[in-house]
Image 1 (cartoon, helix red, strand yellow):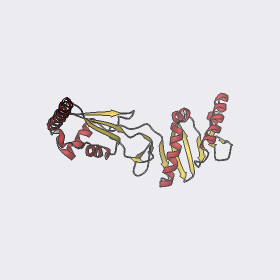
Image 2 (cartoon, helix red, strand yellow; image 1 turned 135 degrees about the horizontal axis):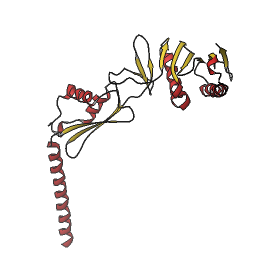
Image 3 (cartoon, one colour; image 1 turned 45 degrees about the horizontal axis):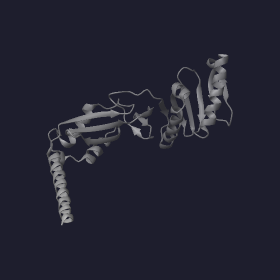
Image 4 (cartoon, one colour; image 1 turned 180 degrees about the vertical axis):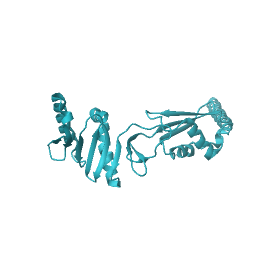
Length: 239
């Protein structure tokens, strides 16, 4: 008899907990959105503004203020935010006090293509439009722009960005032809003929050894062209 009583007490307790949970869930869903908070994460919070995010949401949903939480589809809002040209990733969630939070990571440009139509290359190797809010200080890509030459320029830019010396000094990539890439340096008069993108580490190691020696000898200003196109060699032309 006592076991039956304990059993019914347990069942009753489960029913109460389930009822309370359902009541809380329904009440939570009926609550309205109290406000919207936009947070930009990562180092590149420069190319779009909070007002641009709010405008994008209004264009797609109208005002979300005071909308019942049950009407908010978070995945859909994230997809809309990710569709913006400047957005790399987006996370949207509701807080316990009814605030809609949007955490946005903006795209990161690593090169700027100067052609009839100007645009950035981002750190994923995809085209990124220029921003009216900020102009990135990245190497300028000029010359014969093709799909293949942009792929190669991306490989070169990734290597440059991972090297402190190169990222500080390289300001431009000129595409003479596919497989014939030339680098412009910030303070030095010479142009570096890189050739193709094969063996980049060996080419740049050779160049940095040449640069260190020429800097020590104070002869950098004497060079017009430095070629890294030949295997394990640095060939220079003086002014």
